[in-house]
Length: 156
Image (cartoon, rainbow, N blue to C red; front, side, top):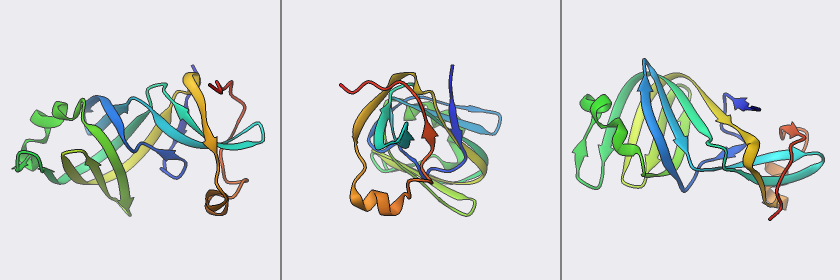
């Protein structure tokens, strides 16, 4: 099975995807989603593709700074392990970071944490053409920067 692994989020967008699995393994937080949008140069075709091959974000946590559930006004910071499974089924909205401070925003809350490292992992078996890259995106992502792949893609 082919896997694409990156330790940055530049070419992947997990916005608006349901979380299908979420668990803590030692200090590694595993979040698996239904799909991810990927910016690739696939055999010379600069485009946005959708991968439904169970993409993951794996974060090596140092500590949880804050976890607030806006829906029920609860703070889960001190009970992170007990509530982590409550993320399953939630809609993942954003993963952002600066230096070693990260933030995950999901439909009903926000988790802020200090981390050591993270990886975006995409299994591209179910890679679908989503749309062409726009002029603005071409300026943002220079063609030589986009990951070059030669993967079979469904165009339906």
